[in-house]
Length: 317
Image (tube, rainbow, N blue to C red):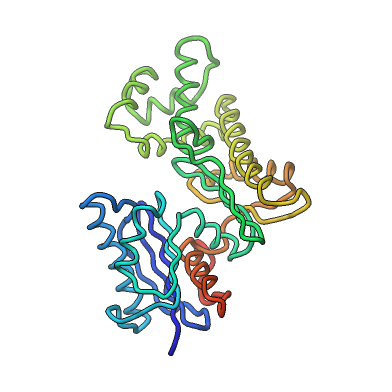
């Protein structure tokens, strides 16, 4: 009988499924809504809806019967971890082998096309994850906005507001960041911005969405913004270095992939890449494949007969 493989990337905004045949050729794709929570009744319902929808679409494109298909192996990677989604996944999907894991692992697998390496993710927060040739893994960062997430978008906005507040109170240097924050929020001064950021009107994602103001000020030559970008790039490089020291010899050269909205800044990418090259001698760049493709690679890895994937466009294409 033919063998089929399933990879699913379940995130906070959407869910993607890919199906491959026994030759490693992608034959089905599907998309669904967010599925990052499954503990509550409402979260469980959304999980079943999102995963079920993307699986249905992928099976339809692959000409497989959703009600009878049993996969040779399946890998599912989820934002927020797998603990609350393991049982639900097995209830929805029939497979001979399962790997149910976190989103960073499948993002890394896609970013390096299954090879050893490190991925650093800098969106609202930040973290790094790596795997070596022996299968050992390590992570750094991801502590959340209270105790960490240095270099993430929320932290960039936080540092921008701190600089604006210091300038306003007379114990910091003048900075364009104050003007940009006031324009973006419609507030009369930085103190009002701070108090507004403490209200439900500004959840973390909304505060993080203001991070591009830092890049804008840096491009204008603002000293405070330039320092914030430099510090953020350095912190992101440091968490990568932490993972590298745990997993690799000092003479090993492995790819370092960078993903997330923070790296849309040319200045941030450049400074981060320079630091990585200088400190650990590794080259950094965008991911080769998507997290969904990474999940499918992990599913193939579960089966001793398979290790390659074909027919998947490079990430972002």
